Length: 181
Figure (spheres, rainbow, N blue to C red):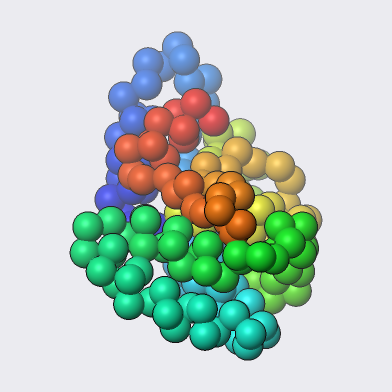
């Protein structure tokens, strides 16, 4: 997630009336902060290489996705997600995401940042995790690390035209959801 997204979320939290916020709001970014990489990109690469039959479709869709990316990176990503999942089971995709979060993501966790997250939670701060990735990945990592339930603001996906399409959250949408979380 871009720094500007986190800054927007912090601005919204700072602008909230003190009566509406009983404790401090602390926003943690997931990709690149709590974990040392872009988790969904890493998952997608592993998912596709584990299913080589999907690679020809991805190779066909990639040039179109690059053209779409000139206007909207979110739509380009959604197109690639669709190509990864078309004709497949949503349940199998979600199970693969959960396995990745449980088995792979813990090795990329940033111990210093997780220590600070724990310190903030113990101090009674209102902690929110903001991510451009899927909340399922964050929850999976938190479950693997025995971190309690925290509000998570991130992207979603839904079934469209036989595959999954992304419904990503942009900076302003994440900021608004962070305020409501």
